[in-house]
Length: 203
Image 1 (cartoon, one colour):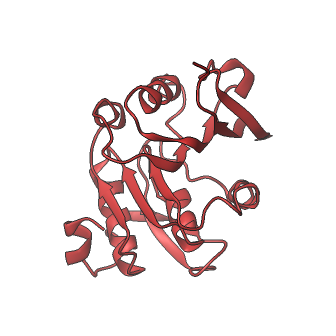
Image 2 (cartoon, rainbow, N blue to C red):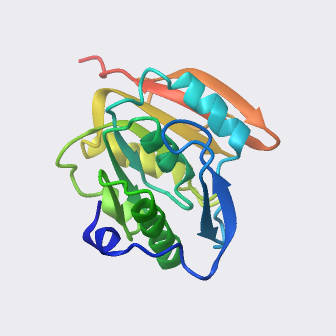
Image 3 (tube, rainbow, N blue to C red):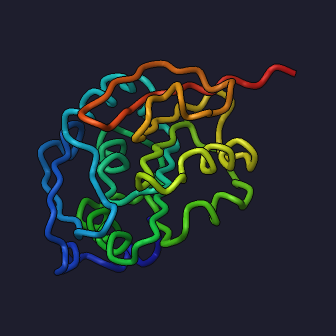
């Protein structure tokens, strides 16, 4: 956990008006607050439940990256279900602060929150790759494909990493790397969500 989160033991910030529920694992049924920030839309419970059913065997001990963390719903769910380490990137100061506070409240010692622009941060080479990545960027800002390209180019992914995407368009139209194999996909309303598995590119 980041040092700022370690020092904090207070509830989420006073501006927090939304609420999310962790649906499985150690913190099952815990309810946490998050701030209402433009573009922040936590992944709904039923979508999270489906996703983590798909990922049941991949989450324990995994290194998890959430570049557009927002409320932290996906990252918190992964930690609750046994992820080994988690890194959240979040541009909004209010959302990053609330997520740090919630991690401190849960005594999640293997998580870190960095208040940064995701694409600018992903340009840097990763010191250690991640097994599982959640990509749920704000819609209609063309952030998903550039994020995927940087994950590939800058060493953020293990050779067989799993990548979850949420988008306003069907997975087949996203233009993601050819060696990311679509494992499962569904849609809820106008939101398309999909799980991909990376396989090393052919030489």
